[in-house]
Length: 245
Image (cartoon, rainbow, N blue to C red):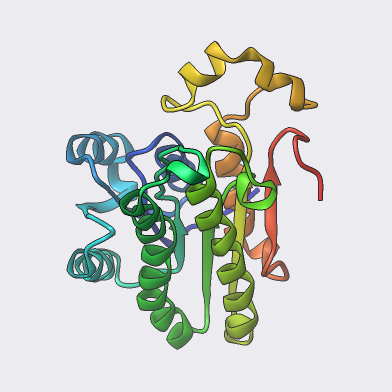
């Protein structure tokens, strides 16, 4: 249904369970992608798997401004332009409110929020010049409903939704849409053990199962498509009915 021939995509967090599948799906639909993450061996393996659909990769620490700039410039050099930016990178270090350390709080904000703001700010300039673009931010269900033990993570993801809505209003007249995806429990290598050890989690999910990275990738394909050019400032909830709003 979706055709991304001639479109270029920069994907952060591509060495993770969701980001790697998002990259594969965009390549499968004709796009050229540039990927980044923290694990060079995984990026190299993914690049080889993607074949000619991958323009390259760049290992980058998103907390480092110079590495962020190098990432952006490398993607533009490799692809000529960035039509679609998918901010998929994120971290979580769970702890109760009173036990959260300043360093962990700041790390959540730097990676989950500040790096998105900085990279998007760099990328949006080219999109405005071309009068076309798509920005898709990976938030989370806990950014909408909160979750005990995840105050830093949920705060960063909630703030990301505010950024998404505000930027969407500012750039829609330039042919750019800005949207977010808020996944619920998605089965990835990071969450598989948690889900297996805590089956009671499914009691709160009407679908009675975890989602898959392909479910999230399908949402990203839609939001990046021409068919979704009238959708902006929205949050696409992919959670099996765990949160309906």
